[in-house]
Every structure is written in structure tokens, then in C-alpha cells.
Amino acid sequence: MESDASESNILILTNRDRFKIFTKVYWKIIVILMTPLIFLPVAVISVKSAYISFYVFLVTSVYWITDVLHPSVIALIPIAMSSLLSSIGYGFISEIYIRNELLDCVGVMMLIIAIEYSQIHRRVALKLLLIFGCSHYRLSFLLFFISMFLSMWITNVVACGLMMPIVKAILVELEKMGISEIYQVIGKARSQSRRHEQNVPRPTDFTVFYFLGVAYSSSIGGMATIMGSQTNQIFKLYCEQIFPASPKIEFPHFLLLNLPGVLVMETLLYLWMNFYFLRMFRSRNGTGLEISLTEEEALFVNALLTAQYKQLGRIRFQEIVIGVLSLLTGLLQATVGVTYIESKEHSLLHRVSSPCYLCVVLLFMLPVNLDFISFFRRSNNETRRKHLPIGPTKACLNWPLINNNLHWNVLFIIGGSGTLFESLKDSKMTEELDKFLLLFQGWSAPAVVLVVILYSKILTEFASNSCVAYCLLPGMARLSVVCHMNPHCLMMASALACALPFHLVTGSPVNAIVCAYMHIPHWKMMRAGIGPSIISILVVWFTITVWSTAAWTDINLDPAWATYNMFNINIHRLT
Image (tube, rainbow, N blue to C red; front, top):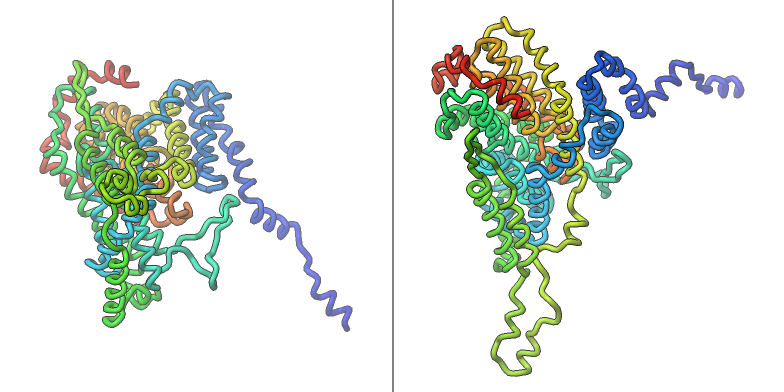
């Protein structure tokens, strides 16, 4: 009987079961090896180098979506392939790594490190909690809309970077009071993820909620003004170059057209993020109960916050320096950072990163305190000797601090994704993709606008939005001429859609910075971005097809100035 029982416990695995276990354990290796083989027919469709670059684009995109390797490693694939494939030119690879998007990321990450080093973000966080309370609904509304407003006048990278330390400080204070947790906790040990063989803490849904909300709001706010997003500046440049007889795109006109849609989009984003992460409108859920406080608890928390704020004491010189330079960065970025270039060929609003680096360099020079003044005080020898500094004064920022805390992988992600998409333009693959859009030539204007929005929205997830707009807008101008539509209609639809990537770290520098800063898993961003993507597509489509008719009466017509264009001359010059 005992032998029969032991024999009945023997587990017999069939070949099908073995295959399932193997694929479950080694699925990443399977994806890495099979993806190039599956898309190999794309590379041999034609002898043109365009399809070879498109093949590299498809393979790399699948790797990014499935997250089989670290994103910074995947970003090196286009550069590695450039040594083997002539379709990816060498000319722009060196240029892509010194573009404004990448420089803004480096500068703002240095500024974040300086803010955290000075602890001024904790003082700001405590003050906000004292004024607005600890309600996640109120705090998220405040932080999201401030991020949106800042990104209307400065780059979304700088706007998000200035908000990130404050958000983190607020979450730290809430964690101290037991209201929420920053990272997932199992027992007394923090849960860690072995993603890409790195032991990094897993952020909770509260953390992901705040940081993704700030990142998405920074992308949305830039749509409202010409200076807020580089895609808007590229749209203005192309319109003036390709169609010199077209009406000029002025700042008030552009603001009137896009600000209502931005406000609607931001409001719906706030509702979606609270619904998805905090279970808004579902108060019986555990998360909804977790974020509520009784009146007695609120009074206790307020007294605790007041005591902690008093413990900070008077504001220190280092905090004053960091605060002033942070505000100066935003001010200069909105004024001096936007230069107006005038030439015989065109006029252009161009954003530069120099204001951010001016403030960063000053942080390396200015001291954390004024103790060195003690050397010049008049006093007796004993008192003077007692108060003299014993060593040199530290600076507000130093290179070892930067070297140990800067997320260098962000630079590879931004540069690699830009290289990947620029290769499509360099190999003329974007012109091949334009032929796909010509299939919708006979459709109605609203339907064509929707196709353009979806087309641009999908592609902008795989590269920096300004890079995608630079590559796609000439094709939209060509499509508008062929379809006898107003070029402003399709080009603006594409430019606005390119400014709204919500799923991948490659879509925008703010996505890459936020995910690296708090170790947010890529699948959480992909799921959370479903709502904002649907919202943005519908709002942009409504803005172009309905609301824009009030600002541009001929936007759905075929104006005469679109016929008399310098399309061929300027397209060759721009490419």
C-alpha cells in the first residue's frame, strides 16, 4: 500500500508541460532571439536602405514594449547597428547626444540633486501639507495643475524636474505619519524587484500615482503655448517655411485655440488618475478607506506637521541659494531660454538650455554658508579663535554628489531613441510611411484628422516628441496638399499628438526621468497611460475639428495659399 501511495505522488511531465515551463522561464531569451527572425522579411522587401532602418526600428520597439532588456541597453542597439548597416547615417549620431532635450535632462537632474542636498524641498512640502492638508485628492489636484501651468512657459523637463523633489518630500512626510508608503512593504522589509537583475525597491501605487500624474501634466501643459512645447515651435517653423503665404501663427491665437483643450484634458487626467490608482467614486474599496482621515486624526496630523516645521528652524543660507536659483532657472527658461532667430529664409522660436546650466554652474561655486566671514570679524583673539572655521566651506553642489546620484541611463535612453527615429528620416523611410497615409485620401476631413492623430500618437511613444514631430510634419504638409485640406489642420493635429506620449520611457524625457527617479516599472506606465491616451486623442480631435473652427474659419477648407507654396524647395532644404 505504501508503494502504491508513493507511486501515485510521482509527477509525470509531458512534452507540452516541459515546453510551457521552458517558455515561462526563458521567455525573454525567446523574444530576443525570435523578434529579429520574425521581422526579417521587412529588411528584404526592397533593396532600399529605408526598409533596413525600419527593420531595426521594429525590432527595437518590440524590445522596448516587452522590456526584455534594460531600456538603456536597448537604446544602444541603433548605435550598434550603425556600424553594420549603411541605412543609419553617422552624421546625426554625434549631434543627437548634444540636443536640448538631453541637455535639459542633465541640467535638471543636477538641480534635483542640489535641491535634495539642501533639504529645501522638505520645508516646501511641510508648508504645502500645512496649508492644503493631507488629502490625496487635494494634493494631487494642486501638484498636477501646478505642473501643467509651469510647463506652459518652460520646458516640460524643467517643470517636471522642479516638482519631483517636492512630490518626494511630501510622500516622505506622509510615510512618517503612517498615511501612505513610498515603497511596498512586506513585514518589516521593503519589497524589492529583481527586474533586469537589479535589487531596487518597488514603488507603491500612491508613489506611481503622484509621479506619473506630474509627468503627464508636464506633457499636457506644453500644448497650450508655442513656447511650451518644442513640437509647437517645429509646427510654426514648418508652416512658415513650406507655406510662406499662410496666415502667421501668433501667440494669442495659438493660446486661444489650445488652452481650453488643455484644461479639459488636465481635468480628465486628474479624474482618471484618481479613479485608476485611488479608486475615486469607489469609496468602499480598501484604497478609498485608506486615504480618508477622521477629524481627530486630521487635528493630530496638523499638530505633528507644525512641530516638524518648527524643528527645521530658520531658513539656512544654502536653502535660500537653492530656492532663488531654482526660481531663476524657471524664469530664465521662460524668457531668455527662448530665442527669436530672424533670417532671410524664416523666423524661428528656438529654446536653448543655457539658463539651466548657468544656475547649475553657480551652484558649484556658491558656498553652503557664510562662515568664512568670521575671518574678517573684529573681536578679541579668544572669541575669534573659537568661531573660526576649521576647514574650507563646502559648495552647494559638488561633482562626487553628481557622480553618485545622477541617473546616467536616462541619457542613453533619450539619445538612443532619438537616433532610432532619426534613422527613419535619414534613410527616407518616413516618405515610405507617408504612402500609407495616402490610402485615406478620399475620406472626410474629420476621419483623416483622426487617422493622423492615431498615427502620430503611436509613433511618438518610441522617440522624443520633438524628434517625431520634426520627422512627420513634412509628410503631413504633403498629405494636406494632396487631400486638398488646410495644412494647418493636419500639421497641428500631428504636432499636438506628438506632444502626448504616456506609455513608454522613450516617448518623452520626463517619462524617462520619472521612471529612473522612483524605479517605476514600465508595465505600470503602460497600463496607467491607457486613460490619458484615449482622453488626449478625443480632446485633440475635438479641438482640431470643432473648436478650431471658431479661431480659424477656413481650417476645414482648401485655402488658396496652400496651392501657392514652396513645398518642394523647402522640404529639400529641411531634410
